[in-house]
Length: 366
Image (cartoon, rainbow, N blue to C red; front, side, top):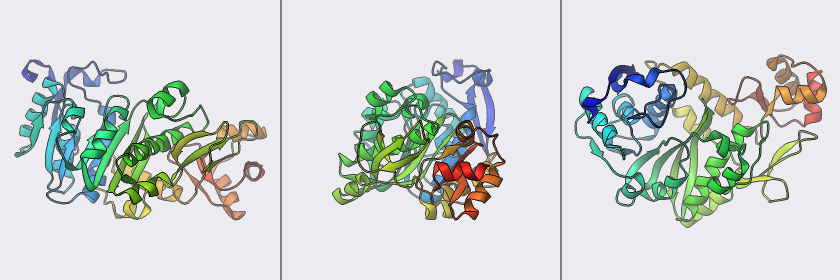
């Protein structure tokens, strides 16, 4: 079993973990690893600690459905400040064995470990919070995960197939997420809204509505935490937040709309992707490696939520205007002085969101 693996002991937060020794090799982590562990996802695990520390309460059950080494679930149990009932599952027997060793390493007793295909497990279990964090798309698991989350519980989902979910690979996007999308300067935002829209449609089939708490793009993945609320009315409310995104390559104008027309992208989630009140209640834990980065992201997401329009990139506007990129703060201040809302976004250092028209933005750049 895992005793035959070459392992290294690492630390994330205050949690010690046994992971495959070759996890730190150059290049992206591979699904071919005997037990999957991606050190580049430590920020994501830090986020789980603080977000779930705010959303869960003592006694709540948490299923890490594709647990691998158990890193995420064990860290939430040990560092979130909430006494959860932990269930770690993976289909890989080596992973389940290693997760058990990591539980022992951290002095955690009473946790449940299982070795099952997650789709099978979700047919027979119910939890207050379920995390679906696959290598690739979460699409095959979402419908069953929705059914396995208790009313008013939390669903966490990650998509690492960013080229597909953002519409760069448009045919695959249509097959996997039933969404018409194509490459656009704001494609990462399409990915975030596509994931929310897909989950909303899958949940509505079971008379379940979604309430996004946090949704973001980082480090080549899309991640969301959302509350699920049962009832046909809740499902209808969620579906009312679906729509389409228009984008004119010639003028760079863009926007969200309710109706489907030729050339638009969707269906996607067109309402705010985060709950500002919930974001304000999240407490950052200073021991985390990425505490400052998390604080910055949550602050930025709150600002972005006030503007209901897809974001812009400085480079696309500079190409159209024939001007060099001005300093970001200079541009944002000029837009605000003109009475427009404007803020940076978390999608990249050269991205910003504003309700100004392209013509007004270019005038402010000069």
